[in-house]
Image (cartoon, rainbow, N blue to C red; front, top):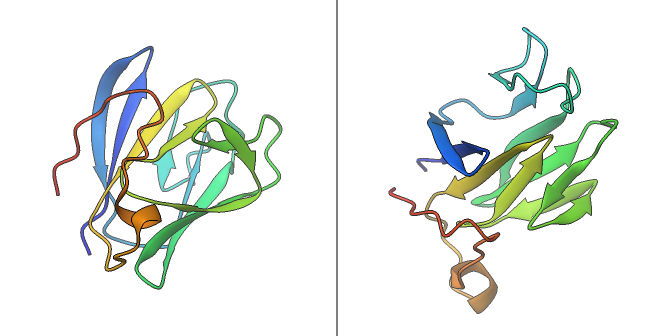
Length: 118
């Protein structure tokens, strides 16, 4: 499964991160797999993994929290098109999953209207 996180800062796309090794940690620290240079991001902010063909995110007790589609979460599934808010950055999940129910295929645009190419 090819997974890409499109990273936006101040409504501008900064880069695409291809997640070829999961699980991974997003944070401000040099030891984080994906580093975000943002004072609102904890050193080890959240962990991203895959379970049953769906991306999941787990907040690592960050100071300012992890949001999925603008809702603060401690753990959550992240469907294609969903938006992770980590500090001042927005990360849009782009991937194809094997689920066929409406919740997995409906657009989950977190307000960015981002295009996902998988």
